[in-house]
Length: 205
Ligand SMILES: C[S@@+](CC[C@H](N)C(=O)[O-])C[C@H]1O[C@@H](n2cnc3c(N)ncnc32)[C@H](O)[C@@H]1O
Image 1 (cartoon, rainbow, N blue to C red):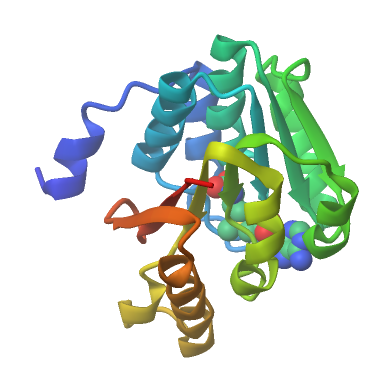
Image 2: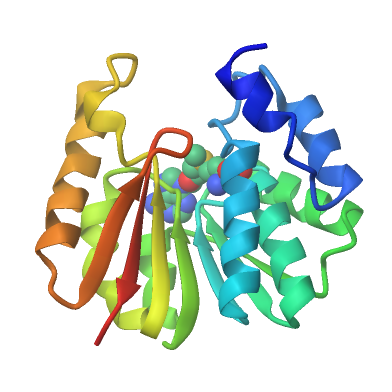
């Protein structure tokens, strides 16, 4: 058993549908990769730990991460808003959320995050950023403004810069983002080696 087999052998999915989607989307080359189950569980943990009620996701994909977030807010009595700009992906996320019985807890928005973000008002407890990597630095200021003081911003894939399998441009975007985040005195941040790396920031003021 290798490192990941061992780690994953302890991860109990929050619903059967999470596991089902993991299996059905495995190896698909027509969608962008979903988060790892250990990150899903960690997001679920953070939602429960902070009793988060307002969770924003940028980059729904087919909704694998959204399922974890949705189960989290179902437990806290909150709500997730998830954004994606890809029409087919948006249809799939809608089907997956409905099949998982999470319609009551998840609102799906179709459109460019850079446009839709301006239509949202603030005080989000958690913002999960997993969309186009070029958007990370571009949306940083807006996301900080939307997050409540004491809230969390979590960005996925932030170790891309040092991943030899990842295109250089993507690595450069997340590197720029990390530099912005760690220079931002409003935030208390760390990078964790979960999946391809996540940058977690607490908004202090
Ligand atoms: C890595 S995938 C998200 C995977 C998903 N979070 C999961 O774990 O299941 C990135 C998603 O961001 C979306 N995306 C890329 N650029 C975007 C933009 N400008 N606005 C909104 N969504 C965007 C893509 O369509 C894609 O579905």
